[in-house]
Length: 419
Image (tube, rainbow, N blue to C red):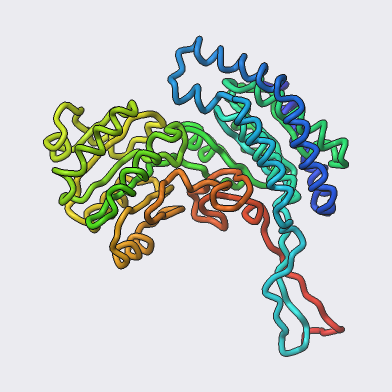
């Protein structure tokens, strides 16, 4: 335990030192580093795939399910996307140092707010090794040092990615310690990292409900939760039913192991007998296990009964809970009761009901006539994302560069004093 504390504290201390240097690092140096990191990821793709293969093999040996293995797996395409993400972050405007809301007071002084880095950001995450690259890129561009702590299931992948990024960044002029990786994966390390408030300014946990709860329980460092995604799609009447089918299939099937995949489908009762059976047949052909309410089961015999637990379940798998509802009010009441305030969507042809859904559904992202899978930093134009915040704080929803900064007041005077 003493060795573990020493290991993490040393990494955090180095990150704190680097943070002071990063805060004033020029945009040109940061962009040069990000592009060098992207080139290094592409050039060393074979090594990254080999390291990832060790993790994937261990996961399969341990009997992990297909969705877990998918989140863990790197492919040549995903490595290309990782490199592309680094370059996209380099192309984004640098928020650090920008001044907004500049106003002139009656005494002539100018008052504004300047964007500044948060400092040292700790990322505690599971399964997905691409988080290593996304987090490093966004923290570097926003002038923050990052301390990464991935799970044991991805230890070889994370170590390989972090090494490639750190070496490329150092050659481009980024200070040592700016991209730190906690290589020890004992569970106790989560508590240690979450209590290093002397060195760490913010913790962002990304993972299962157990991880989020553990961090929230122990943390003395401020946290922004990336909580579970119990995401809904409500198909209204009237709606473009061809569009509705495409949205629902994409939201569930495109990548079911992600937090923004649809977990519950709500359907207006007018569509239960004619349209819903056709959609469910399509989903079942795609390999989706359906768990339905009594009205759903009557419309499409042979599917399992949904239990109370299914309505609040985040499956992260090809499983879907389906409920027939009376109307928009019934759908929104269900979302309010069982949702996780992550991502919810409506498919409708009615403008007024679409806007009611936007106003009244209290989630980090609310979508009209589009898939929940679009609540993602890349898709929303943020370049990459460091997570999807479900916390009611300055950052909510997909978090990009601006969400990794805060503001300080700046005052431009000409000798003003207080009377």
